[in-house]
Image (cartoon, rainbow, N blue to C red):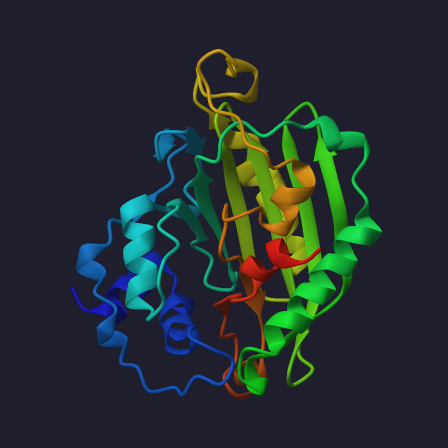
Length: 287
């Protein structure tokens, strides 16, 4: 089956366009659509039946969405010319051809992260750390790849009932184009499950609402792996708290994904892509 038919049959033609520009904001549009080997990807249409998100969780999605398992998500990223973090355990895409977002799932076996900081998250200090981190990183990368932190879209918020930490940063790139990234971290027995929403900026709020309505409520951590299942006598613990988790921790995450619309979005209608932020690792080096 040709790639054009796959996209037509599954109503996700935007994926092909995304592959053409995923590498950087200035990436040339030269890749062939045939480079996306759809035969290696097992697209699963939702049916309200639980789908495994790695070995840590399950998610039930409606027929309006498509699912890739962890291996296929890694292949999806490699076929786009990027390197996966190797923490991917799944991804969800909308079938609606007018919707431009993807929800990535990653799991990090970091050790049990205490939520003792839940009432003491200093959002101003965190924002300053992010800004300083990007300033430092910008010194080590090409100017056209610079990113800048403008402020919080959603300040870090902890939900004790779901053991989840949520935040969103406002960014802009070298050309002044705006970007937003949206992150959810769900604490588990021995690590955390990340849900990373990549979206076009114009519809980010609506896409976030879709994620919170259709995806997150139907995501379940497997029995025996929940935060409450932690056993200090046998399970490893992390030295990183909620603040460290937001900043990326000491080696816990080397990259975050951000949905960006750059100059190419003006030249080519409805192109959506994800940029790997190369600077997150620097945050742990800041005082």
